[in-house]
Length: 323
Image (tube, rainbow, N blue to C red):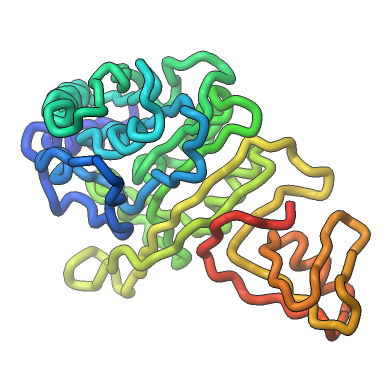
């Protein structure tokens, strides 16, 4: 195994043995769900940069895969929506993390009358070779893990997630991104990569890797400030700004004209007619905003109409779109 992956295993082995609340800086609030109580140690082991738990993904008692179990917090949250034996599968390559997570579920069972620890199936496994059968998962997720991988490993990990998802299944991810050029000396720093900092890639590259894998729909659900790498604190001459990104990639068929990527744009028709129909399946009702993918935004803009307003990307898309 490559050196940086061994370093990552060592970092998270120590984090399993001794919870480190400063290891990651989660930018999303922890879901407060009725009747859900979190063990304190599980909260202390919340090693992520955002959240992958979105109730609209978790309807109809789905089978959920979570890669990189941490202390089990998101596995417990997923179980809240999938209350069946082995409804949530957690995969991790670090034995100590699997052991710590299993202990946390024993405590979670005491705190939550609805929860049974056999709702969660913990498996030893590698993100690059998942111990999961083809087309069996409704929702797959990872939080601040894929950012660690270099390009070739990231491509393999994404391909594995795609393989195990059912048609129209969802891959929900949270990772740091950086649109500035990351200095090569920082990228080569194995510990900084393991800490989900120097492996950050530009958002456009991140999205392209998802669509190149085959995902026909991509939703940008959140983009938030995350960390600063400052000269004097890190080996860099420039101040580097890192953000956290929450994304859902859907295993939809790839459209002939390319993927649908939703970044929070909307179109508003304000002409004199009751509606505008572009003849391509998009109907805009008068003065009723419609969430649109970037591809549709470009097509509408190319019409040159003065009675259609297209908003800028908000980077907070929550469904209801055109495609």
